[in-house]
Length: 80
Image (tube, rainbow, N blue to C red; front, side):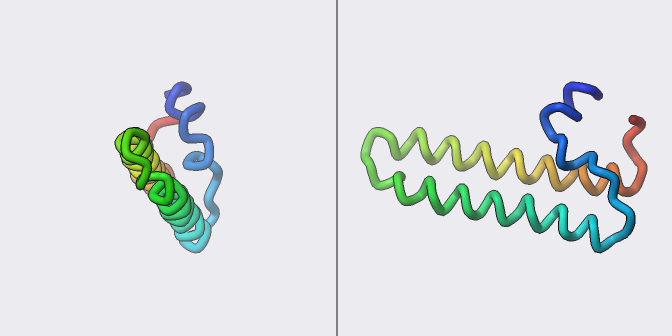
């Protein structure tokens, strides 16, 4: 569990109410969109486009996992 906390530190910040959870999830979502948009600008380069596409997908996956972990932490499903 310590490894997951080191990889996703923002997900395990104490959330006092639902508003804090929503803000946490929105920040993950916006960060994923911004990084995806920036990397899509470089996606037009023929060889590097594939690499940027993979990195963009990994950032999206990281954001999705962060949102799920944040919700599970708020619901006290995870034993920390």
